[in-house]
Length: 418
Image 1 (cartoon, rainbow, N blue to C red):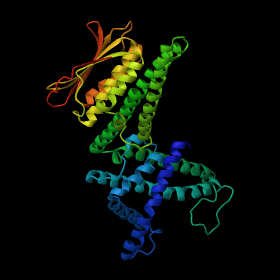
Image 2 (tube, helix red, strand yellow):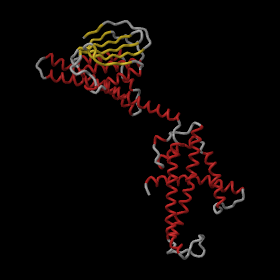
Image 3 (cartoon, one colour):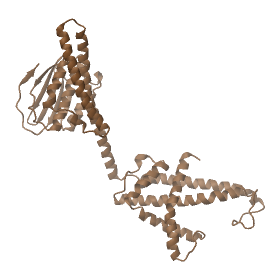
Image 4 (cartoon, helix red, strand yellow):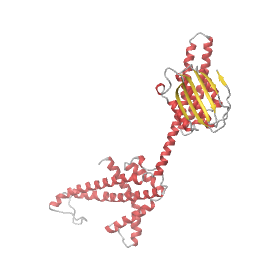
């Protein structure tokens, strides 16, 4: 007997056990009113009891909470694929009707197979032992006591056991095929399941973006600052040692800030923290420190057209900060020491963010660092209803992001160079 057949047989026996309360209720109450005292010994009464119990099964299975236990049993014992079955109670009328049909099929076939499982094996054993142990004169079975039929009885016993296994296998296969049809999700439930999965994937993608943009930028800055500090400490110049001290201070501040942002993201993974986006500061509070850390790492940053503090909604403000952070991290990674031009401008149609730097020998992209950060920038822009492009432009490598804000343009604040 295979494991799959054994599981399905057990599932059918469980169905027969679930049928017994209905069967006994009909037998003791309904048939007693018809004057049939013992329905177990009367085959027509037994068939009538079985038939009248099934509508009662269907009525009780219309309760919405009846579907989850049926699905749990079907997943464990019929071998049905987990995604093929629905989750949660059956709320719609058609779902409750399909659940009722499943219960009738499961308990009906289960009652037949469970009854046969109780009756056939003892009779088959009796047939197998008939040539050796013959029944007495008071036996309830009309069995042969002599002749060829006596020695053919063991073959009949084996045939009965094989027939029982075949019936159980067939009924189990019917239930396994019917499970996806009767217990499967409806189109509305499939849509809800797809929306939940999309929401989960969106959260995972957002966590990945937050970790990459915050930790990735910090590690790039720390690596460059630590390298510069080590080289300068090895030299005799006092100004070199002073610059190395500034670089170490920048490393300390960067690490401290990044630990806080990483803790917020890990809190979301533990389902105990706030939205990971709230870990990012806005432009007004975070941009000066970000520029200081980038410049301390050796990148000459020029800012033009910076927006006035507090003019952006908080969610947009944090997302723009992450975009600027990734653009500067990309510049640190691929062209350390090169001049970088950062535009932050408000226009009548939205907000423009641009990071430009001279083209390095190997332009930034998938071939030089995987391009995950640029993909994250594109995802952020798309979620905000904007667009992002990155690539060579007039001798420079340019990251250009456009975001809609629906606000009036903000006057330019001049130019800051350091």
